Length: 126
Image (tube, rainbow, N blue to C red; front, side, top):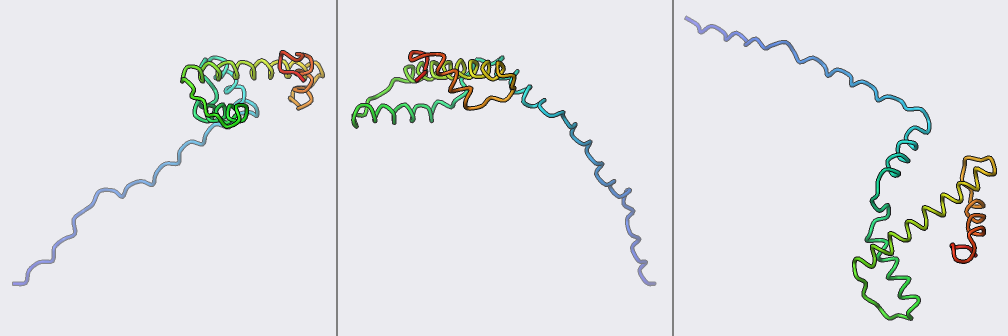
């Protein structure tokens, strides 16, 4: 008596094709920028990375000391970075006010130049 052929095992239903993921919501122009502005205004952390800033400070220090390499404490570099970032933020705020005074929203280089000039020599002016 011949052996019966094995019957194929029944598999379950074939897996359904993956459902298409819902498309990401399209934001209106400028929403991402406003979100970033709110994020950075609410945070108090430093914006520049400390490593590249420290290298820049050391490089500038070498230029002014004619090749003498001074050592910097970490807290001194952080204090210098804090002061530099505060200065830049105030300068950009003043420049933006200059652009608003000119009835513009876009910040131009001439706004920065005017803000520096209005601040005088002590405020980072010419």
